[in-house]
Amino acid sequence: MKQNMGIIDRIVRLVVAAAAGVLYFTGTVTGVWGIVLLVVGGIFIVTSILGFCPLYLPFGISTKKAAK
Image 1: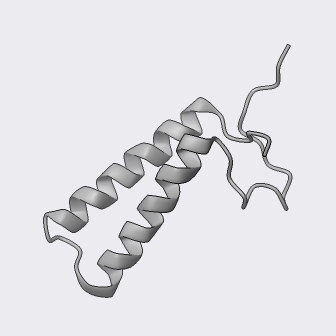
Image 2 (image 1 turned 90 degrees about the horizontal axis):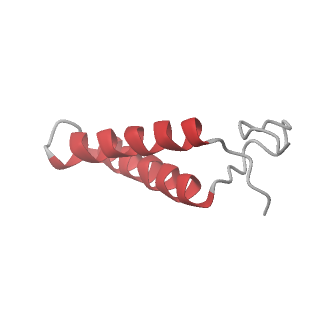
């Protein structure tokens, strides 16, 4: 698995995942939408840690800077 996410992309995903967690655990978002939000947040956390987004592959997207 070759990394295809840059540092800014990874940080933004972590911030969005943290916001999703806060919204769910404070009771702002509940029910099915709350569960969906938690799943998306979990996916964002995993992809941020790995530095790899499988959805970028078919489109040839990479936010990682090229090595010199």
